[in-house]
Length: 233
Image 1 (spheres, rainbow, N blue to C red):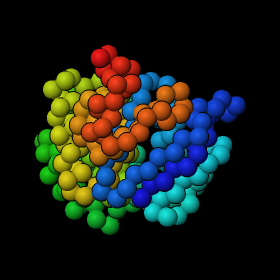
Image 2 (image 1 turned 135 degrees about the horizontal axis):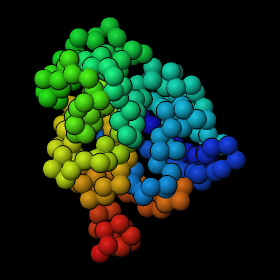
Image 3 (image 1 turned 90 degrees about the horizontal axis):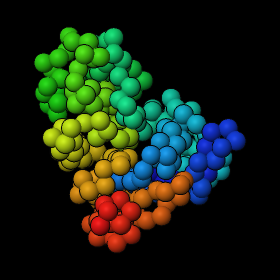
Image 4 (image 1 turned 60 degrees about the vertical axis):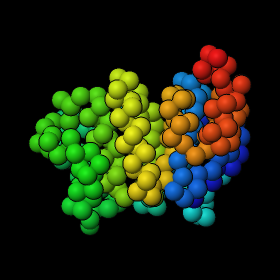
């Protein structure tokens, strides 16, 4: 579904990614793991059309989307839930959800809201509440729900566990598993190595803008280099 090949990217004169390649297949969870500053969000932003890469290529469902504008990429069905949630704090929960379907999925807005509240029933209890007054976990649910409103074919989740308590992290990963069971392809971009590998089909590790490890998640969790670098084992 998603093919990234030899991607080089950055900001202005500063290069962040150096020849990054990865794939996400239909109905697959792929984890992209790395520490802060490794280049994870830069990759997301180039795939989502917020920035154009310096070199390399990006294809989605066989079509070249390298450097395509973000509105075209959203229309194709690549939806990013950004790091830090980026909800609209002075709008209600319902209004935030409706904004998620502004560019894609608008004709089925009611059905999509019903789908979101089946996954996140807590949001229905907060429909008329200003989004900025929600707890951190509820805001993350809202951010993912807003992404679902656009009927994603590929959902990019950028650090969904960031800032959540361990109990909420467990709940969030369970909800991501449920989304995947409904047939959604997910690129999970995370620092939480153990739970990401427990959830993903395959994974890539990025360090200093380069992919250093990749393979089936079940094999990577046993990799001595990964254990040493990320798990302190």
